[in-house]
Image 1 (cartoon, one colour):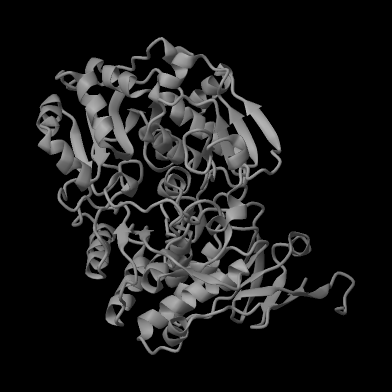
Image 2 (cartoon, each protein chain N blue to C red):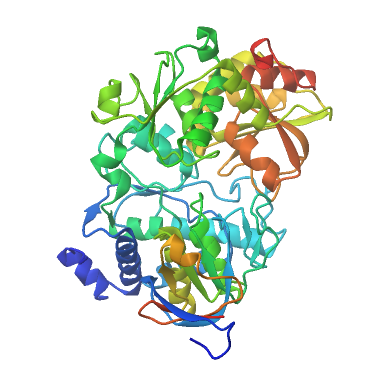
Length: 421
Length: 146
């Protein structure tokens, strides 16, 4: 299969724009060869993950680009890094060679010209991509949110190809960039569940977890969601579905832009299966994400993916000025942009007084552990509960935001009536 | 065919994802793997506790693996294990896996290596056993001896 290349593609490939752009173009061309497509398309935006440290090779890669005249073709925003750049005590760059390199890596991507937003929830920031835009996403929850909720189009791009796509502005015209790959193939029906369950934020994390487990490589549609389902709830589905499984696109019928109704979501095609969710499925999902053992509660982890303004608002309301129990730590991760917005409302002062420790630029679910994150940790995030026990010396308990707050204040796990379902 | 009754030799024509020449002993993984989170790049060791070959080191092998799984971090995991010498000499896949291909491509470019990545069908992969002697040429011909 011969790949159709523009004049600019060919010039890059021939090295006329320098060695970095040649390397970037070769990488995109290799990806097209592996995907077996004959066409490249333009992208308008990239959210890159290669700024997240994964060994010395990451640093060698970006340094090669910087040393050889690399230039971004499209706006590129950064995912979380390993280091909280404005609070080095979180993961100390002086603690090891790896942490020092992790910081250098983040600085190198700033030098390359990336917009240093350092967030896994870039869709919460202004100027997000629009419906139908072809973009590059790499962080799994953002890929799912952009595809599903925004209606932009991206495959789940891995490290290096994300950067090479941002340098060339080109990607193979494959998979989720094409209409036919976006049709729903199976249905999850939540319409028979007790309506009050759909008002609870935990429900959307559990739903995402179930969808990830059961969808395989198929595109799922969800029917029966209430119109009260918020962007925070859709974020929860995006994150949980791409942790327990690989769901780069889902349709929430009546809510998301390619799913005005089920027929639109399936593009008129046939649906393989309809799964009607029961309360027992939710109970099972909650069980899979961590049993509440007899050990004492050691801490609370919020903000995976990064907390939004509306989540801050709910937290402030639920906490109502009360203090976190003195024997617990309570971490909350968010982006610098959201932090700035929330600070203007006076909420940061109040949360700090209560004992909530706010972290930007990074997250708490991966190694090395942020200070004090060991033992039994409660979280409002299915993604955190799914990953952290494999990477940190922790066990997880998942709860709604309200349950997390009551547990934080009381110093022990408090589950509300719905929680024991 | 070889001289002894137990000797076997055959060839498989693979699709070349990333070209190169390599030889070594086959290591056949029974399941796919995430090279971020499921793999220790420093030691070249499978650390995913759910993987059937948990604890296995892959260094110096011709690694046969159905595909990678999950994370955007797989290309970095491949490049890093190749960089520090704990990685395989070649990868033989049962899917045209972009993440593994790009990881090897980047390592080859940055470090002057020649680690090939090729793809064959799963039923072809099942003809190869761990310990078989493998040679891969730049056109994707896999020569197997046992």
